[in-house]
Length: 140
Image (tube, rainbow, N blue to C red; front, side, top):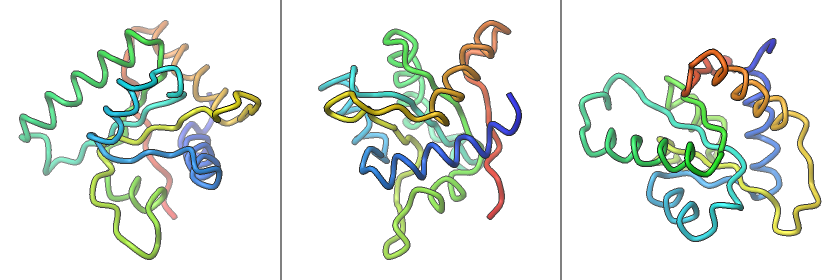
């Protein structure tokens, strides 16, 4: 896939505009357990400063396992602040962008070409035994 970083940014912005974005480890876990069929895509963000955070690592492991078990495409990004810049509201700083979910619309009538490309990217990565592909987010 060419330019997965642009495609991810496009999918995140589209979901944000449609009100289908959930940010935060706790908030994401809540949606996953209440209605996993609503979850279309998962993004995990890890910065170097949080790599020693054992609690966060445990949450990530559980979220990854849940995504794999429920056939939810998942990617990793290494710049949480950049992810927060993309999905955060300009008026207030996004505190927890470690996990961001894109959910399906309630009526199921909507298709997103960017999201479809990301699903294909994840599928191809799994074929190459890369179960959690990393995407570098584009600069502004």
